[in-house]
Image (tube, rainbow, N blue to C red):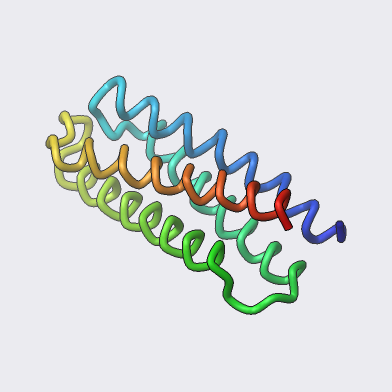
Length: 124
């Protein structure tokens, strides 16, 4: 495996941990605190870096995993934007139910993409 792909794999694992901490904290507290927002932002930034490195390192066109990964990244970004908006408008107030579920769904879809990527790499 090329060094670029190895870096992408390491960074995507960091993204999983960091974004996961943010989502779990939000799910437990039902709040978008400054700490939660920092973890979500860092997780998205790490995933963007990892995705970029994996695209550079793979040299492949858009694959099934690419479509799944980009849609999961889009869900993460949309969740982050919604979290920013909620935090800006309501501070530490409880998140509405729909945002609480959207956060859970975005993280779940991202986990599906993460597992699918690992399975495709091991299977291929």
